[in-house]
Image 1: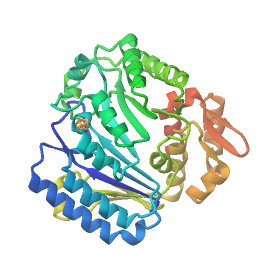
Image 2: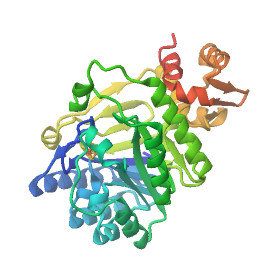
Image 3: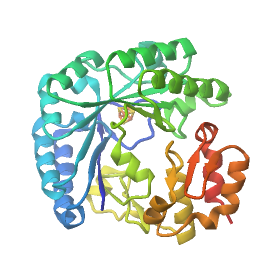
Image 4: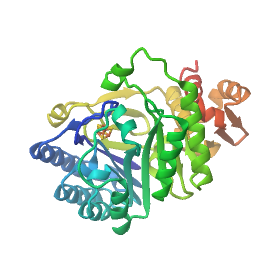
Length: 365
Ligand code: SF4
């Protein structure tokens, strides 16, 4: 397994728009049980992880874990995946005190702060609660003082009531914090969330959302963080290697409830329930036929601006893209991809309408 993902399913509350699996306000006993099982699974999988290149702690809110839990977790991951060159962790600014920043940066060399927006009204419109603790500026200062070189900020746009001017303000505010990486996703009413219920029946303004996506590309590109994937922007050399690997068909092992894994043939997903996962509920296995797998790997790589070289695709997918020639030529005619003998890459339009690219490759006969 070339990449390791650990899902930390704990948050300080539940945001109204969130469809990720997490337990709001966990107690210490629950965290201990989760840790014990993760430590056990790391030991169990150590031989598969010895060459893992990247580790990613996602959630949930990994930085909510107590310092002693983080230290034990980091030591166990280091033992299981000793050569991982990139270690990323997601953090919520309010948890990043000086002490926490020191613990996080003792192992992680990338920290991503979940900011979403600097505008309190926009945050409350999607039910993201404020918590006592450091704000974004202080969290960034603490991380930099602890020696962090690769800082990421997560933003959301197309929030209810947000205008292009407010979005520009958020982007500029984010740039003032000097991050190496920014992720920016439009808010989506995920089925079953309180936010989706609140906006049910309202027409989504796709044109506004598309305009904000273009605005992000222009503002961040001018500031030296060009787009390298549909929703991700980075200073050259600071792209997320973990995500890049996953988008390019590499294997990954996901530990923790709701975590996904891919071994090059099959994909499996752990149960999205902490108690069932602790009880050893089996994962849901998705056996993918060879042609479908080639189509999936091809479309995921086309999320990135770089796309594929023929050689990279053949190594990652174990097959060539000729089986999709008809679909690829049609996508090229529609201006969604550019094709040469040795490369395929999405156009800007192909990134904006990636769903059309994906549909064409996944549902290819
Ligand atoms: S902090 Fe993140 S993972 Fe937790 S509920 Fe909010 S959006 Fe979801």
